[in-house]
Length: 97
Image 1: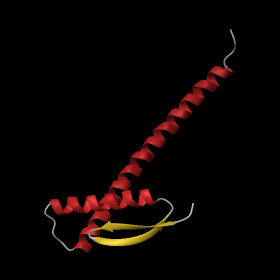
Image 2 (image 1 turned 45 degrees about the vertical axis):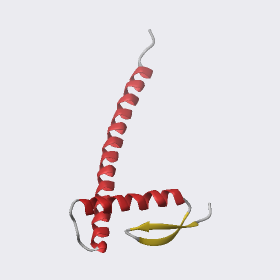
Image 3 (image 1 turned 30 degrees about the vertical axis):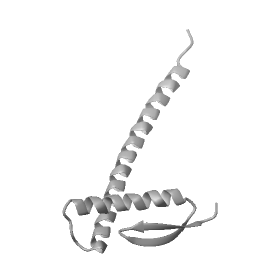
């Protein structure tokens, strides 16, 4: 798929990006804007650049938390698969009655 240009507005600034998924780019920009709005609503009044940095840090922390949960779930599923494989192997190796 070709990279399409798309204009995004974040913090009153318009940025043009090229992407193969304009809808995802718009959703990402909306997520950043929502994070900025949340920071502003909490009473934070630093510069826009600082708010953008704080929003990026908040979003990165959320990503890391999600990755940690996914890693833990993947480990749990691998352990369960090993357990099931062991049980199936035991059944396959059992003598027929």
